[in-house]
Image (cartoon, rainbow, N blue to C red):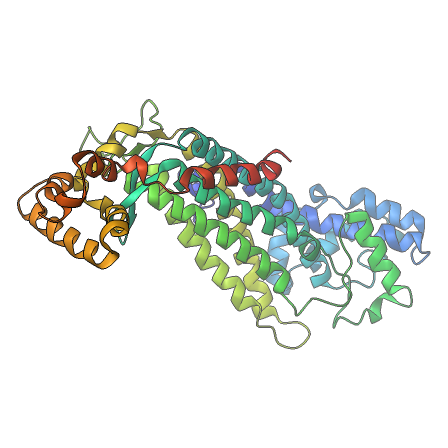
Length: 453
């Protein structure tokens, strides 16, 4: 039975992917616990702390399939402990002698925290793959539409000419920084712990450090200098990066959502046969993919905020903050995975209407070139005079429904210092794109390394 949007068969595809759900489902969570227990036994046997035969038996049985999850869950409810019922089942699966060495010297948080790191590492590989997919689609759009002129908008209204490629390159540049953040956090994030009840490793004996190092070597994780049981910044940093990625993708989705409004109609999502827009209006082609991105991004922000709460830990171990992570971290990873996958899909199928972009640019009948005209005219008559004359011409032209060029031609002062050809040239949007094309080229050149690496 599904209650959460991550579990409902009808909704889960909006909020997660099959791959991320497989990483964070309960059987995989238990599997990661068992991997930690197997690594611990392996390391302890190598150091002569437990018998090699016991370690071999533990490794043979420390698998997710060993654990009866419904039975474990019922026992968790009875004993009020998150890990002991699973440990008991692992112990029972081993020989009586080997079972005595299961979970030797470790504490619950050692296993659950390190197991969570293993889950995140699996998800991280997907994120690196999918953020590149988003980047490649943005690079393609930036390259293809480097010179596709459209109206730039500030404060929600038409401002100056830009290109669609410039817009996509800005998004690509931002996504590239997120990729860099993901890679840079790896040595801080992929660190396990084996520190015992209060972080002193007393229960692990005189070879505690070697045990921790050996266990993490088996798991392929880094070794901390000191306990991080009450220091939750590693997970907080990671979900913060995911939250930033969600913010960028939510922005892209929202922008493409608005650009699909009928009044603009500058882009359109790829349409698939059978896609319905309304139960009562058969004609509709709703921007369902674009609108889902800012929706999921809002959910990600909420769960990331919960992880910030988990940073406030009391003493050397705090179940209040710790247990909130069990909800926050998986949810952040699930939603981030959905955002990256869906964004790449949306961009791949995006249709760009160049003619409509130019049509919308012309809605202001040339007035959005007033800045350019002021600067060029100002070189002849001074900036303040130019501003005053253009203001007068613009107000008269707008009130009388004249094009900007016609309004300037009718202004007595402007017409004295500018020819018809000069006025026509100054009101051509293609001549006022500044460094847009060069900026796109710089971003594409810089992005090539991480997109192809």
